[in-house]
Image 1 (cartoon, rainbow, N blue to C red):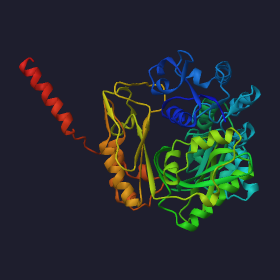
Image 2: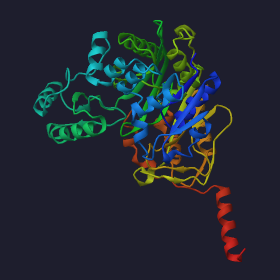
Image 3: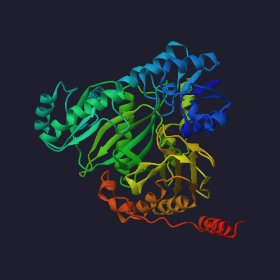
Image 4: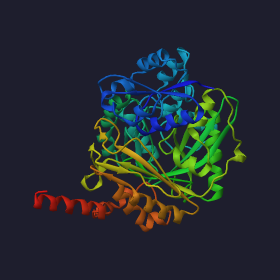
Length: 472
């Protein structure tokens, strides 16, 4: 078993990994920029080291992180998600220095990170993919020719893209001409590659992904699916496991496809195979994420499998502890990404001082976060503050529990997406369990909520006014 792990990340995922290490008797090493000096993951780790004054540079320097891991006696690095988690070079540097990268092999990361190579691998394995270019398009003329063959609308995508960036939908030749250079520019800036490809746009699909685990002993299993259709500009907001939109036959089919896809590329550790489901109930491979997902929590909730612990065990060379037939699911789980954003103001980021915070609790509620009362939310990173996860036996009860948990949560000093999520939960389309990726754009009225002060907040305002009036 591993003895000491450097966590090449920050925020709630770093805290999540630290907790897994603590339960496994493994020492944890945190890293932080000056902007994160007072972050919770710094306080919770066994050891913590500053990686520089720049907010981002230290988290994105693979050589410096590997050097730090080696000098502090670590035998492994966990990349979490984001930052260098899907960086094939980082995984290779770890291996070259004799450190274990807690994730798949570097060649698999590279292959699945290249969207055109991933498509080719899936086609070879018999996994259905959307019609599109066979590889990267050479120029806009080739893109126009292929689009004419497969028909509009099409999706123009960065080959090395991810996280919803480097993607444009084009409904016509004119839009393709307008977006071609934009996607190349965004791809070059965000991913260091100008390569793009295109594929047929599946209009208003459902976004269904499957969690897979593979070890170095030839065992590969799935942990059922998650529904990620509630998203804004390709960024997920609310995730559900299992999908309330699938029947049992579909569930078994897509789980089998995901395992087949993972085996086809020799996948080890935790990963996610993402699919689009069209209005005729046809599944199409979209991409494979070669890391732990933000929404791994809801899969853990319905299956009882600690995915982060399994990642560490697999990296240490141990076999999976579960066979496919032993994986049982129970009820429904919903995850809400509580973001520091103001939905009423075009989701403008809302960073700053958290004057008061308390997490929701009670049966079937889990909160993963790295914030606390008095924490100063820095403006340099992703806007996600916390993940609120609820579970219940039925879909209807999970919705009710979600409403209660979000109302229980106290987070003051900045704007958050909590009121917006409550409006989504109350919408008949969501409650019916029948929605697609157009839900957010189709319901702009949901941001028209009113913010009623809680009794305790109103009481404090009245008390302050009285004190000011009386001079006390």
